[in-house]
Image (cartoon, rainbow, N blue to C red; front, side):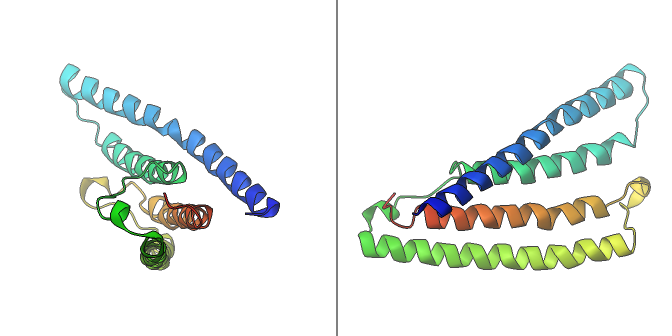
Length: 166
């Protein structure tokens, strides 16, 4: 890898680290919201319906960002039972095939979640049932952004490990 590629990889990793650090504090929001809900429900016999969608959407965002963080660190789960038995050419073929599958899956997910998010924004979509007051479109618009980050991390990982036999 040349110097420009290394600089780009470093900058991208720094960018992902900053984003994930900011969103890592979302767990505190989740803990506070769940605590308030428990105290309210069991201590005062009062169910606060507004807290439930906040917990659900915060947790969804937390999981999405966590996926980007884990992928950027190479901490995702890999099944290497067969991969370790492959020769160098088969390992390279396996990497290319995996890269193509990942790119197709994430590309389609970006495409579909983008138009769904824009449609939700256009109609100011809210949650169903007793949570009609809670907007859904911010979460739906956030999904393609995070999946794009996942795709970037996957592309960077592919090119970073291209010459390695892991």
